[in-house]
Length: 438
Image (cartoon, rainbow, N blue to C red):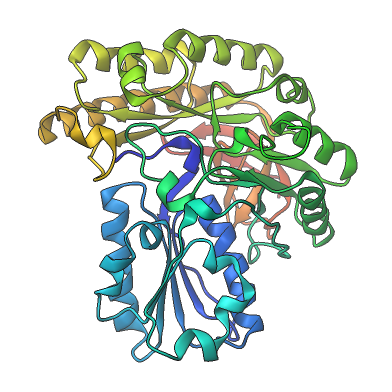
């Protein structure tokens, strides 16, 4: 199954070094998973669980599940004798499959993994209960979890929402995350304030269906209200970024906030396709014209904005005409960053029961769409050449502009997590080239 943008997927294995007192974390998939891994790291370290391996899985595609199984087997070889604890969306949706793996010590549900008491070694590693996964649909609230940062990353992520009330025909994620539930605004503001106080330059708001934030809270506030509140109440925050959002749910307050310089000029949209019939069969709630009009409005409100989108190639019943509408949408929406996903059926979803396309045809269309995306990115790069830009240093010579464009700096400024001024001299097709003062 292709990745829905509302899951905000990085689609990478985010394994990284761990402090000696912490368990080893292997994080697959989305930014929300990355955030939750930091929460688990804190809970486990606080409970004295230091010699285990925690694998935080993703279920958004069949390949993501296969990657999770491979990561588990690799972890068993790399950490012989260590308990292997498996959690995340894939574990929530199909706990039995992971429980059958001889390498796995425990399978832990998405709700259970966020509780401090889950990670007490005596309870977690004792007894014979291998699967500890409850009904995610019974969960009604999402609590804020305070963390001091993301292990030195340039930006920190704050979970403001979890779950999804929509049922797109290709998507399995609601069965791993449950229905939509929001973190109260006051708790979000406190989390952002704490991250700023610990030295973070940029904070990213993340969730499964971010624009549904507030629908379950008193007074039904909207995401734009939350953004404006953060910017007002945390004046020392240098840059606030929004992760992937549903194109049809942007509220008036969020449009109004686009004029605030501290809100990063980047929006990643959940578009998924460029043909109206396929959008209906996906059970999306926007049309092709809606997507184009939104892109035009965003550029009017914020001329320096860069737009990204997820688009699926080879959805069931897609004809060549349908596919060409997706190709043309890239230019008509002025997309700079394209995440292309070849469709693959996820058992349990309506789309898996629709007439399927040949795998070779799906692969070929995905390749053509990626080529379109690569050309669009080069066009975007060219707009920056010759300019002097602020770039947030991520590590070494890697940095990003406020519109999330990657930049390779001429030297390591030794300022990870801080902005530098860079003269953009060119690009190599994958990133800009930036010269910084000696």
